[in-house]
Length: 153
Image (tube, rainbow, N blue to C red; front, side, top):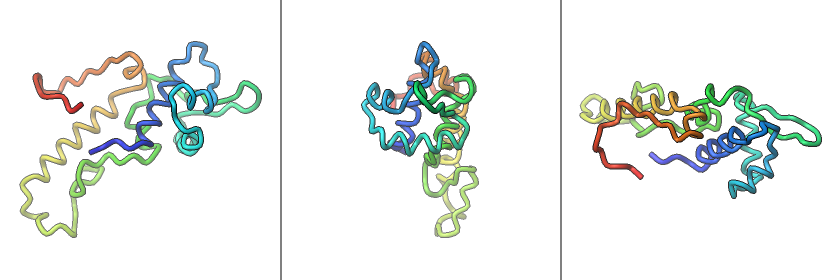
């Protein structure tokens, strides 16, 4: 699985807003400049983030975007969901984990489908338990991760 640009940029942008010391509205131009991102692309993402009630806009001079709720209440999973980031590890396991694929000729005899479903569930557990506050602090407690496992990075 690979996190798309939209998921990456959405998380990066909300962390940018959350880390501003004065908590004043932040313009997309400021975010684009600081994070070296396309402002046009951010505009598309922020329409979705606003519809998902993760950010709110402030119009007028000094306007921009604020988090719609505390950073402790916004998870990475919430952000991915808002921008339509796929949380599916393989084609044979849907986001609900059911994995019912009628076109798969091996659906009834697949030995790995349960593996992918469990990995997907652990991935989702991490995404929905990691908040913007965790990201800002670099505080990642993946207590289920196997000690000594090689890094995916």
